[in-house]
Amino acid sequence: MRYFAEQAQLPSGLARNVAFEIADGRFAAVTPDADPAGAQRLAGLTLPGFANCHSHAFHRALRGRTHHGGGTFWTWRERMYAVAERLNPQSYYELAHAVYAEMALAGITSVGEFHYLHHGPGGVPYADPNAMAEALRQAARDAGIRLTLLDAAYLAGGLDGSGHLPPGPVQRRFSDGSAEAWAARVEMLRESPGMRIGAAVHSVRAVPKEAVQIIAATPREIVHVHLSEQPAENEACLAHYGCTPTELLHEAGLLAPAGRTAVHATHLTDADLARLQQGVTVCMCPTTERDLADGIGPARTFSQGGAGRLSLGSDQNAIIDLFEEARALELDERLRSLQRGRFTQPELLAAMTAHDTIGWPDAGRLEVGARADLVAVRLDTVRTAGCEASQAIMAAASADVHTVVCDGVSIVVDGRHRSGDVAGMLTRALNG
Image (cartoon, rainbow, N blue to C red; front, side, top):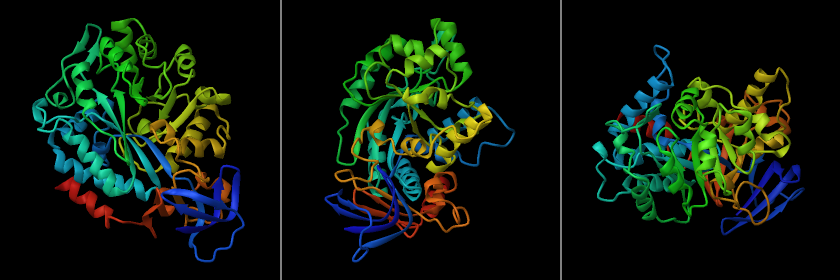
């Protein structure tokens, strides 16, 4: 297959009239100033495929349904539990297929699914203990994107000064009962060409320290954890353990090896920041963090001068738009600092394409040998008309994506996903 891009963001910089030769799902040749003959033309700007490094697919059911009466993170959580309570493998497949197709429409070619909805009602395992994970595998396959299943341990119902609380009625669906039982179930999962298996600790609220230590020793190369999303999480950890969540995870050994990602990392001490800068990636989810009134995380302080690496996620999927997530890194920092230009455009693109942090190190670059992922963005819409291609991240939206190729396969053409009417799929999945 041969594509011809009017403009493309190559590792060396912005280039014009770029031909991409694809063979066996990879770029066989990338040639600027090429002849367009015989190639499928890509109007506008072509970028690498985007990496959504933190998603909870079933949270998409809450979009536009949690704002009456204001509420808090904790009241939002009760609505989330109600959604979790009614899903089964078939309905979860239908919802996730639609959500992953929506991600594909937004230019996302890899997703890190932070998966903790494991069991049936009351915590009773399905005949296949990983039936819900298999539903996600099939959903991603049918949507045409790669999946990294971050299988999360979720063992307790919360944390206060007296210790961890037992799981509540809905939380029993999340819990395997012990870290050992969690590890045994995850061991039954097998990777496939489009799916990687990683591990996750839901949070210090949901996983006691001794269980964190067991999970820290997992042979999985990819390990993620929710960290300091809410001040109440920090307060509970300090009250019970006498340390911050970052300190607890460090002492338990979870932050030491490469391949570890802390999600949110919103409320950190200077000492916490210093620990995370020793090789941990921070995945920020700005649209979720603002939707839930979590706060603005220290993105620029963490990553200044290359000290720490950032990735991005859509988290609760209240918005699925990596342009918006990347823009929020810059705009939130402007609010905090009263200064513009806090992140360069290449830095924002790097955060949008951090595939390696979810197990796909050969994706996210328009270069020979890399996985053949392309995202073509129109530069003539009401949002992008007149913008410079080098600054498209500050103007474009997911609606401006018109073509998406993942591993050499076209999954979005002329703004339509190969599965058909994604809005209809979502409507049926959400109201069925």
